[in-house]
Image (cartoon, rainbow, N blue to C red; front, side, top):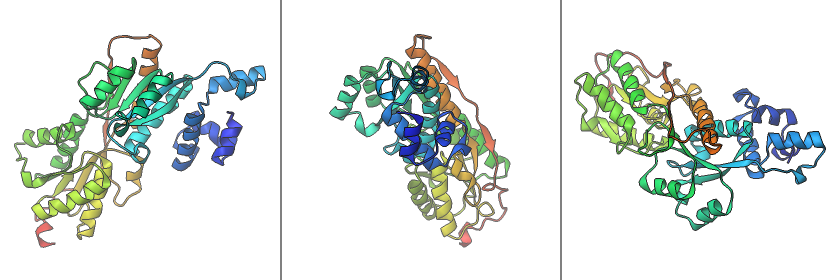
Length: 348
């Protein structure tokens, strides 16, 4: 497979393919085109080093010599990873960095597939050099990893209790910063919409409320899937339970987008009636109205660092588990504002 062949299959120019696979940023092509190009790269096992050797020696790609080494991306939290903005961005960071080192992300495995015999055969019959695990693992996933992979790196917002390399952006502390921002704006009646079980961002919400001796009220908490649909339904449940909250903290942007839609349909204005803040800073949040205030997580960089650490382990560069903590910061935009002294929810 050559750049020209990838370009023909993707329906774009050779220069566009080159910009995308050499990580020239989001301006290289649209998200749809970037995804299409990387799918072809993953499927065909295209390698820049092999392509360069072939060009130098005059070989046809059909007769390429050494194989690219391969990595599996295992999505522990989502069944449709390419539709999840956070995890797909994380995976692209891994893919881009791995590609520079002559590694290809050739296998995508979701949590639903780890008990599928076909998955066992795939991993056993093919030379998979390592695995990048994206999202919090359960015990079943950890057993799968231990059985089939010698080299593993984990990346996410929740630290896991396992002896693997971990690339973490501290979700608990990010939640504390987010809720503290609402408190600094004068909010004390802050609701939470998202998952609560084993979720450190919920723990961070509780930490921030307790630090100000503010009650964590059951009526202010809605346990719901961290999806746009979960956020939408969660906001409707919240409105049925409570009328006096002035702000909502969501553990991720996608949930917040669903919450915003439900509140706006209810006739509420953001942020004049209700402030909303979340965590992630996916691209989409700058293109909604109002633009979402969120904690910026360096998602692409987390993926790139994860790939570097995994490749270093595969190649014998280190043997003891490593942990890298990535920084975050508040991206203050339009969805948060001062708390109103007289709240309007009870009038709506």
